[in-house]
Image (cartoon, rainbow, N blue to C red; front, side):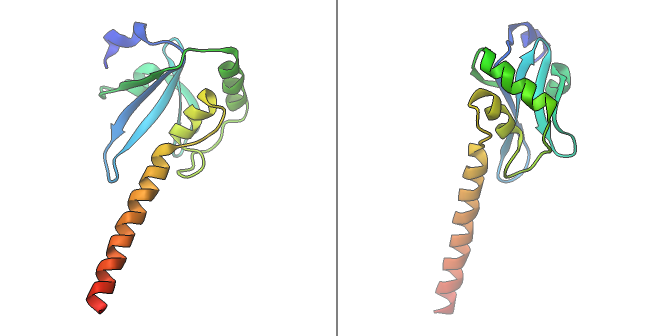
Length: 133
């Protein structure tokens, strides 16, 4: 996505870009005003930033077009009155977006990453057990 797409974005659009690392994770933000997004990042927590700052030459995708409604606005205002610090497990970027969209700060990608880590750990445990036998 680039600046040419900005006029097509609407409040309620869920945006993301791929971050480097393993397991691969996505950084999420929610369009809440024209040219403004809500994000949650380590060190800064939940905050409004300009859309251009989120885009910053990255390949950004629209995951969902949720539209905007009075419930979303009320949840946004609650977050802006009491922004929370970033926490990988309990309040990450996807959780903040889902707090507005779903009313719950859930992050499916954290669950998926935990599942991958558990499988890798189980694999090492099985390999260790087979060597000991």
